[in-house]
Amino acid sequence: MKLQFETLKEAHRSIVMDIFNTHIELGTAAYPEAPLPLSVFDNFLTLTRGYPAYVLKLGEKPVGFCFLSALNPHSTFNSAALVTYFIAPEYTGRGLGKQALVQLEKEAKRNNITTLLANISSKNQQSLNFHEKNGFAHCGTFKNVGNKQGQTFHMVWMQKEL
Image (cartoon, rainbow, N blue to C red; front, side, top):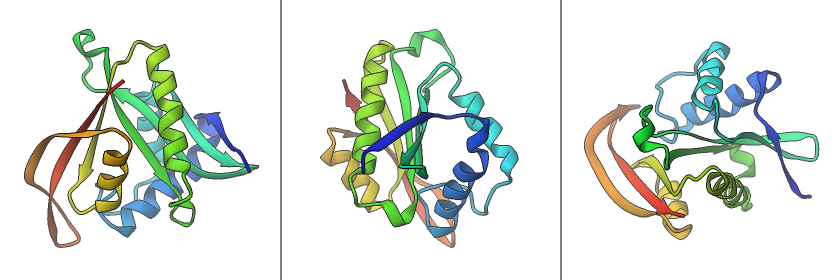
């Protein structure tokens, strides 16, 4: 079944927050310590204003979401964007993240974005491997800045030039 990209909108509030909250509970892929209320979805809509943002669907089933957002609010940084994607755990390892990244890269190029950045927990080896495999390079580490579930972790920054 072909992955479809549906523009992120209000109707996706519950499914996006369900997927995000699942990742919050599972480990350090999502940084908050406890599940967040549905109202946090408003932050996603604000962050993605003017940027591509999608819910990923297999048929009619939402299986993840992805978006680009500003690295910095100053126009000086308009050629760079932060990349975010979360796939429902039961759908990871199927190439959906790769397809989401390809879609976001196409949209980034269309919008004159030449650099994608990702910040990743040092405890999230799967994501670190994914980004490296897909052309991202390590560009910095903030050591011991996170603590979740009794584990201290680094924030690893990775960058991809388009």
